[in-house]
Image (cartoon, rainbow, N blue to C red; front, side):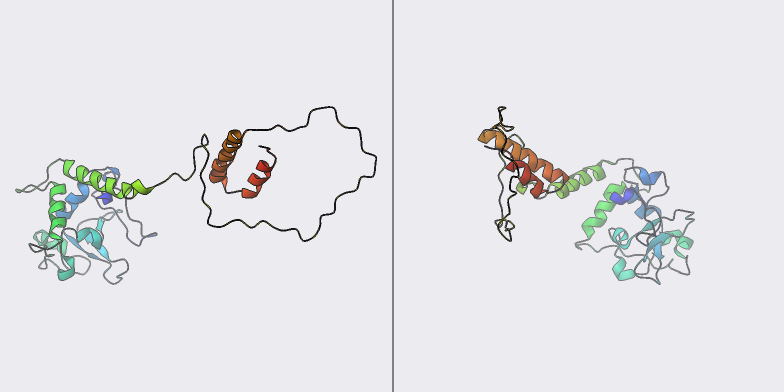
Length: 246
């Protein structure tokens, strides 16, 4: 049903054209895609190249040929047992194009009891095909079915999801698969030796302040959130936290 909008481009997929009647309709979300199954006599295209073989109709295509993929047409017709074929032989000459004569080879319908018969019934329902011909203007069956399918596709497994980053206002809980290995010094560090007598003890207060355990955890959580957003920079984070005294 999503093919009711958009188009195919041969530069990307090898398939070129639109699934509906006009460029304007290809940006409108409605049931026109399903109507196209019955509006046109669909015949194979690009039969000499199985990689891009698809379907088009025998009428005038203009600059935006109408096309269906095999995965489109098989929703309504059993193209596996009758290929090559024409989806509507009542349109006569529209089945005889591109060097093909298919006006007497109707694409088969699915037999009763086939597991794919339900697909074909849904195509007719969504198209709004009237018994006497033509189509109704009711998009509701398609919209309702699509909304249900979309909900299932986008929420499946949602109940097992957990937050990637803890809230900055609470202490984060982390798990680690292994204890990180810190680099070891290759030798005893050489401390600089003073060359002058030490100066007198400063009278100002030291340039640091103590923080509580809760404040430290809140700062740590904020840094974790920033690391997740802008890249995991554990070294810079460690340097920053190393300057905070709990």
